[in-house]
Image (cartoon, rainbow, N blue to C red; front, side, top):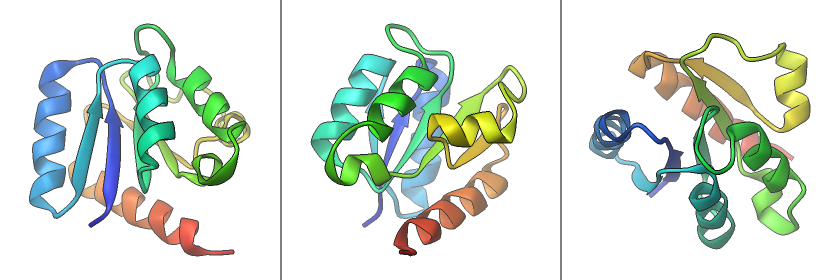
Length: 126
């Protein structure tokens, strides 16, 4: 079963998105802030991370940079940035920070599922 780490500080969105993902067959691990998200990512090695950009304690940029600088498989976990504030940077800046994709809020669930599939397929490529 594919494991997704959802790092989101808004409880309502975190709960509704996790339920929708679980109904699609994903195992969802939750974190309410950037520090908890980084710890869970390193400890649990999920298959993919959905990472809010504007988080308490540590923002999404910092979490992504820390993961990309980690040793082992954690550095290869696909990360999809989530934000309600429009595109936070150019696609080049997002890629340089370690994000594999970007998804605006409110979440377009069918499109997010496509991005998850694309990111997971990309992870399997050498």
